[in-house]
Length: 307
Ligand code: AMP
Image (cartoon, rainbow, N blue to C red):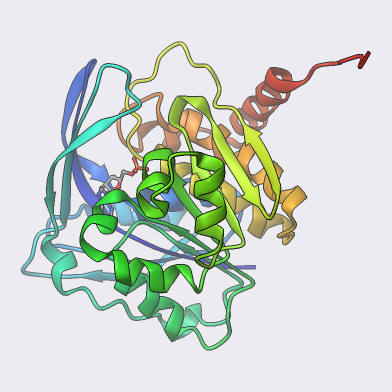
């Protein structure tokens, strides 16, 4: 069972009400890979980095069963750089800088060894490049999950809608769901977005959990109430990695199993926010994950007598 992940590998500068981290490793595909590699091997990464990206970070991912044959290293350019500042509620943030650098002329090539993967995670990236990866796969994966963000809606909405026609699951946050659909009600937004292509839609609501839509069904996964949220960067990508990691591990893409998968995604995201960058994701063990999943079960488990 294999999973292809596509997205950015980057440097981030992050400011939160609790502190600032300068030029730490981030990127959508980095977080997806750290999360998904807890559930299956191999995770087959497609990305691009510059001369400045730490070799140790690639080695660390490889140690976790992440294949990096599809990660292009450009000798004379800098890695993608993103900088963001969180508001006091830690749920919303402003993007301060997006320097595309190597991403500007990225032309992802799917390595021959990746062909035949059954799962594809299109992490946040230029929609055109997400589409190019889908088109290079000779056999359509069993499940294609796509993440995106407002940045691409602002500058590449038409391309984004083309990709949407080809994916099974879309992951966005509530603001992005509204922007994409033009609807204020999330239920109406979900219906409009599912008419654009994906049969399943996940709307992430930060500390307020996530909603999974499919046809007329809706399921809710809470976020774990944490005493301290240190840095929410990458929580969405970590959620995505946990979600698709669980589906790929269990090889079951039913709506029922997707309910479990969004709980797994929420559990993984709850670790991500506890420290800056990928730090916490590097520390956790399988036991930590199981324990946190048990906390989720406790959080929503109740008896009710209907009168
Ligand atoms: P998240 O907090 O899950 O939305 O993801 C944050 C990560 O996405 C950071 O590590 C950034 O490097 C990366 N990122 C930010 N903007 C973009 C973008 N426009 N395209 C791709 N990745 C991005």
